[in-house]
Image 1 (tube, rainbow, N blue to C red):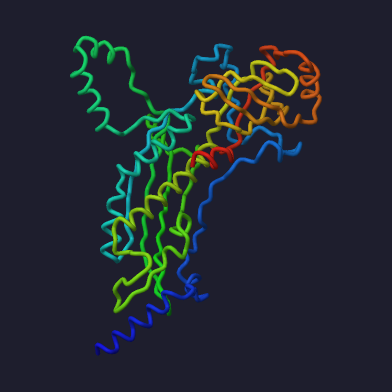
Image 2 (cartoon, rainbow, N blue to C red):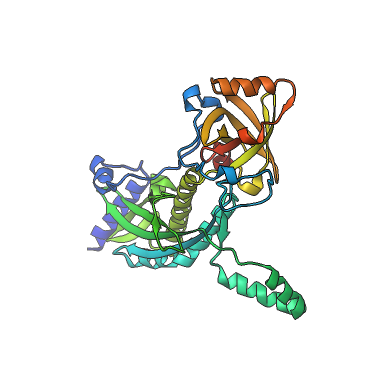
Length: 376
């Protein structure tokens, strides 16, 4: 018996040192049939053709008449207003027949997921995030009472309003852990599936917009397949990916959750684009009344359009560089229309501001590649 075990160990050791083998049926039979989710990256302004210069479907032009020239004032009737969101994580299911993986997945609870997503969304400044981090809020309030006199703190609280969410975003999560063992080695198979819904917290209506849908991410989306391969001896872990180590498994799932949030963010930026009003034109340059304060991102692709008596006329596509409270846009391509040509002529070599009844706005088309390369 000892001789047989020793032979098996030597055989497996030899296999581990060889090139990893993937029988055709190994990956096909175990792969999920559902389509995996990918980030949706905005097309560069330099790749636009004339027919592409259109106002994005998800930008609401209703209410633009309520956007006046007081650029710093937010008005709920104006679609340039930045929406407030509160994140809720609901069902958090675990599908695993293995005790070690189940214990690791339990640590990725709703509170952890919620705070991760809050931080990621707050970083783009596209939305106002109403946090659920009550522990930090309560600790900070206690510190204020310790460090300042009660009268000052009371006055500050009196003059501060708690942020009211426009939308409640609910996310249900299913975390799946499985393993498949072939002739030569095994593969740890992990997946996260998140189902999102958006609720009006005042009418209790589940909304069709923003439509964030379902998000699915596999372990092989965040780790190479080779790094998830392992070998066993007598049905016990021997070498390769250590699925028996809870920290190992949790690290993979943390990366998968972060990847899922990247996908969710890219969808949100399409469903709820950034927007601004054009202050002036000069040649192919445009100044905007908002910048990072409205969630405009560096090298963002934006469509410029004129709004007049309910009619929307796209006039150009531009790439934008924001500062704190304003932005400079470089027009890459003018649309081939009479309106665009007139504005271009009037801005040739001089500063041109459109009349109040013919104002021009800018709206983004999605997550810019620059943000993916440098921030995710």
